Picture 1 (cartoon, one colour):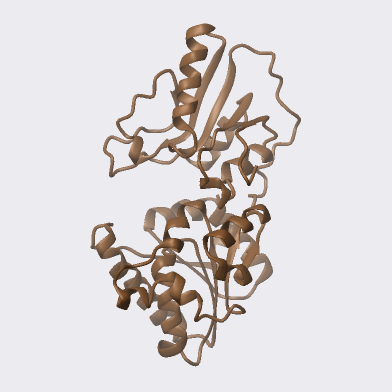
Picture 2 (cartoon, helix red, strand yellow; picture 1 turned 135 degrees about the horizontal axis):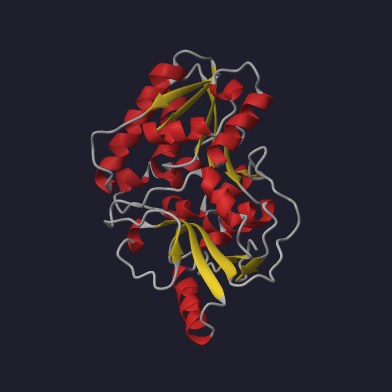
Length: 317
């Protein structure tokens, strides 16, 4: 898990520095379960919950509430704060500009934003309202100090795509190798592909951009032409957008979402990695430019477990 790997790395680099991790209570427990006891015991886990529904018009209030909590617990108590965040760029960047200038003038706040392909829209968003637009991400980036705000990407190959999206990001972009959990690597050689049926897998959260439909169509064609020769596995979960979709001959290894606004439960990390290890091939059938600007975590999982990969070309792969 990425967040657990990051926390382990931070604790190794900063052995005596206080670390607080904010998030949904269930996510906190999931992260805690993947940490060694000596690391988990030194991290202050702070559950954050919102009464408001997760819809766009309320999201600004949610993030403002989170920043207020950060301000009370952290910014007022320390002269130096390092903030690492993986979401809400549209609101956090402008709010941090205000914090630096108004709320915490005596506190130095170093902020690193983890960039993922799903955040492209947030970074490109421009409001039609000129008053709101003054505080969107694009405008705020121009007012922050490049030495105190950095945007981290998980592979150097994706930096040009982010520069294309927002040229002013370029001096703030840094490449960071994805965190690999200790003990997860199973580099015992490539599994023999002589067994029948051959096992193909689509990993992580199945979406259209990740090639779900291409994977399902391939499974249907193979099953029709050579029945019993291959199995096609969804290892992870179906996205909420595909909650009611017909999965055809695909084998699911997680719960299927029952409603579009309630995604399926995520596989636990141990079961997920164990299932990948049984596959003959991992399929990365990405479509569009989604992974041009975000290194794929499942790509690293496949490489880490020495799985052969079948991929469509993208800027990243």
